[in-house]
Amino acid sequence: MTLTVLPETMSRELKLRCIGCDAALPPTLIYRCPDCGGILEVVRQKPEGRGWLRADFVADDITLGEGGTPFRELRPGLLHAGFRGRLLVKDETRNPSGSFKDRLVAAALSQAIALGATGIVSASSGNAGAAAACYAANAGIPAIVVCPDTTPRGKLAQIVAYGAALEQVPGHYGNAFEHARRLCAETGYANLTTTYLNPYGVDALRLIGQELHEQMEGVGPDWIAIPTSSGPLVKGVFQGFMDRAGKVPRLIAAQSEGCAPIARAFRDKKIDVDGWENPKTIASGISDPLLGYPEEGSLTLSLVRASKGVAHAVGDADIRTAMIDLAHKAGLFCEPTGAASLAAARDLFMKGTIGSTDTVVCIVTGHGFKDFAAWT
Ligand SMILES: [Zn+2]
Image (cartoon, rainbow, N blue to C red; front, top):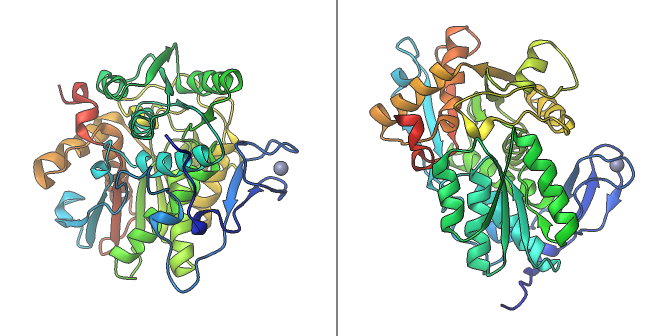
């Protein structure tokens, strides 16, 4: 195939900034600051006279129609019998490969190809790998996906179905993260791992915040609950609302009690997040212990605090109940991770953190087709 050329609007005034030391860098295939090791983010000029569009982030020959997902109101009783406010869901299961990761991968792949990459690598708990495999197949370039050996079979099947090379590594997600880094060094492929590692992918997630702001017709909700692993989706929602409204609703970083490094640091009033030993949860998409890169969790925690929100962990039993209720009572078939947002919102309502007349948005991140075992 011919090399993807970014539209003028995508490349205009694009640069990278180190969140740690504020160094400015040209846009290349780089994943951490060469000076301080800090997380990199994209800085781009705002379009004149209009909002951001998908085309500002994703090349025409890469997009598969990701984003623009349904946003709908559910019965308040689905949150709790005593809840009198509004409950809404942002249904990210409706992206091309069935999760919000498509938004991130489409943008990261567009930049990778434009910058000369001949292949991609993705460390994944499953959904990002499926997205990477899907988009690489369409782009006609090879993809290597690295997953923990505990990854649900449905997710592995989807990755293989798209034709990617699948490598499984023992243990937790952090091992896959490190193995993917090594593979990139060996092959020269671009790293599309969807933690904060790829700044171009993370940057595109601001579109989900902007979409939510639009779909709320400019009236921001009180709370947005977000299933959270390392947390790029938290940053995306935060940035998107800042882009559109200059302020952010209170964000709930929803984690599982079996892997809750960010929620633990929030509870303990810490600034820095520590890695989580021995993650164990049915919510595979948020089973990221942050071992080896806890600074990513610290960044997410700082954004949650800046929004006056909370990081909150719920048990697997509550996640499963929320997952079943979304399917039985709202026709929304999701994997356990996708229901962690509703499970966390329910718990926070019962604890009195969420008020009885508040407006609550739950982002549902991944499709039920991905993890049939969770339903049996
Ligand atoms: Zn730096």
